[in-house]
Length: 326
Image 1: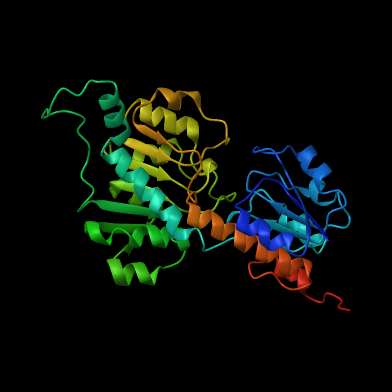
Image 2: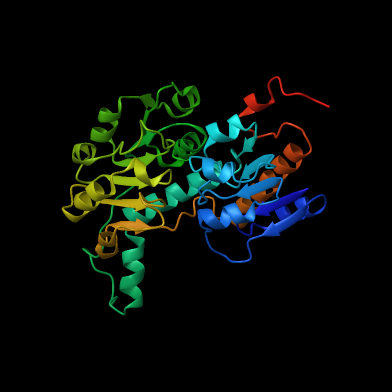
């Protein structure tokens, strides 16, 4: 069997697949166009893709022999799951393995904005530091503040639990109660509006759906405290980027830390001029350990799926219902 890999992933994952399959790996370290992906999957049985790849119905239907799609990501809003399911093609992702790593980055962004770390680094490198000054680059304390968590799935829960050492008052907004957070942190489930109005730090951890698109818009930004800090390591379109630029420019809020963008990888040019926003290039899972684990998980999903088994992290398990065998 043959597999097309849209971009090089850590070698341990590729090594798993090379033992049993023939691989064609995109030799260039860049995102492929849809046309290039269609060309790449011709004659292939399996596809290992990234979150940045547009795997729509046209791509899925381009190769009649395609048997399995493995995504090297936890999110899968780039894949037309309905089209794959109609073709009885299982699709897998890599959940869980990047939970703690992404939660850690959210905290890194929070501290970086609160303590103005990038501004301080730039200030010092430029030779402007001439000695301690009482009003130099004043930031905000983190301990004993109110933390608002929007979405308490795996990552949101891990993020909130890491607040224990800072003695914070934790509010969360989610459709479901989160008993671990309530029991371990004394967290309180509140409506989104209450969370926005009362939180000092707000971190987003919901998936991108039609209901969460522009969940944070001008109305929501105006509800926040003037001292509030907004963190987004989930999906860019959850925030209306134009509204956020306005909020930061006019200082409705203290600052923001972003790892994702509305039209990623395109960046609102105004962000580059703002000192109160920290910009990361979508590196939520970007550690050696986690990216390697993701590669191994994606490879194992693909290996099992191509051999006729149910991948451990199959998103659309209904493709195996009443599936003929033999």
